[in-house]
Amino acid sequence: MALVDEIEEIAKRRGFFWLSQEIYGGVSGFYDYGPLGALLKQNIEKLIKEHYLQEEKCLMIEAPTLTGIDPWVASGHVESFTDMTIECGKCGEAYRADHLVEEHLKVKTEGKQANEIQDMIETNKIKCPKCSGILSKVYDYNLMFKTYIGPGKTKLEAALRPETAQTTYMPFKRLFEIGRKKLPLGVMQIGKSFRNEISPRKALVRLREFTQAEIQFFVNPKEKNEWDISKVKDVEALVLTKQDQKKDGKPKKMAISDLVGKRLTNRMVAYFLAVSLLLYKKMGLDAKKLRLRQHKDNERSFYSSDTWDVEFMSEKYGRIELVGVADRTDYDLKRHQELSKQSMEVSVDGEKFIPHVIEIAYGIDRPLLCILESCIRQDGDRTYFSFPPSVAPYQAAVFPLVNKDGLPEKACEIYGMLRKKFLCLYDVSGSIGKLYYRQDEAGTAYCITVDYDTLKDNTATIRERDTKKQVRVFVKNLAGIIEKLTNGEINFEDAGKAIK
Ligand code: GAP
Image (tube, rainbow, N blue to C red; front, side):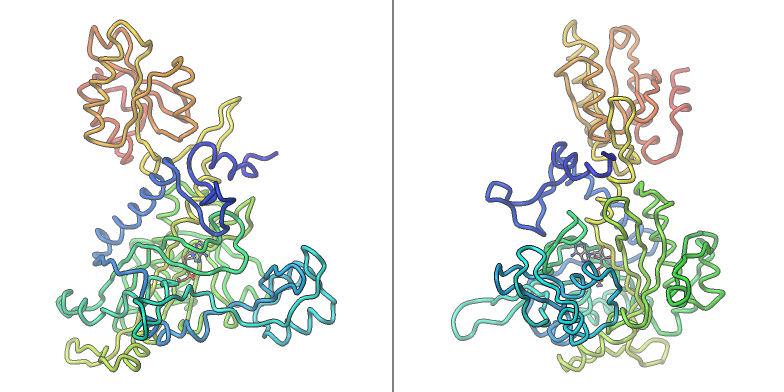
């Protein structure tokens, strides 16, 4: 069995993630992150957060996940956030009708209406895959989790947000004031979103509760094509345009400057696609498996004039959309203006207009799964995760060579010093080989071993996870060296020079 086929089992055993509510049989679409997964997820969020706050100078906000229903009426989710569904009259199992047809007939159904799907089911006499029961008529099923806020007659119809975006649009005017009435204005939210998916499968790929990091850039429509792409113009990627999907379906290698030069998209969308590719590489995703795909006209969301995804071609799960970069025009702000009767218009440099929005919508859970798939390695009987040090759950672990002769005390002292600087573990339970392997399985970037020489000359060894190479450094330099290694400021060979 290939390693990637075991990824869910390994993730469960080592404490990355597992099906939530396991003791009651689990509920599909909900996962717990274990001790390693929760840290890995935080590090993914951190990379995105640092980039958008520091490089793109975005503001960050946090809004509730539960809202009244009005924003979702305005956004169109109440009316259109639906999937075609079909149910078995015998066992009650529900299916995405279009997916069922695709799986059964091995055809594409993109752009087909419910009545066409219904015809295909009837003509081909498709039955329930589970019990061969007769299927119901195809119907539209809204993916929002709806509920009420408060009791009694005055209770408010409410929903859990299916995207963070609308909760950033609602306070736009306040944010515009706080941002000193300047555009472009980038606002980021990292938080949970909820979709009552019909039959969630593929582990973290289709969840009912998931984390998004969504950035909304409010811009003057003119700015979309004035954006400076010089920093990323040479970034290359496999690109599948909507035209190529109609023709041969084959992606072509292009630079970001080509996307702009050939007018395939605007400069802002092109820029943030490049930024996303660079972030995914930094996270440790296998760059060869990434590609950019433009949405076809019949698949694009109603609010967007142009949408592109960064996709990961997973060996186990197939094509996975990681982030969507969309030109949402002024659709959302206009709709909120109409329903709330609050003006969303701004006045900048004497010009009055409703800003357009370029949205960069990252999911966090899917890249986590793709990082596991990209970083898992087999080396003899060692199965380890080759995470980049900056996303590894733990940057370092400290052990004594043996559990006696004052070595544990010295190792503890070093551990106490290092953990003030970064996440670090201390372990003493087992032979040195076992201690190394345990950390390799968790993807810990560096192991520090305290031996008899440490007591004599205050030096210790650092072992690099992937190569198993070791260098000896002064204890006083350990924290600085690990930090520099993690930030990519020095390479491992250079780390040993500090001893001389
Ligand atoms: N605000 C736009 C928006 O929500 P989306 O393409 O529906 O766009 C953005 O979602 C990202 O959120 C996706 O690229 C994906 O990474 C993540 N995502 C969406 N639905 C998901 C689900 N059911 N489970 C896990 N992640 C999901």
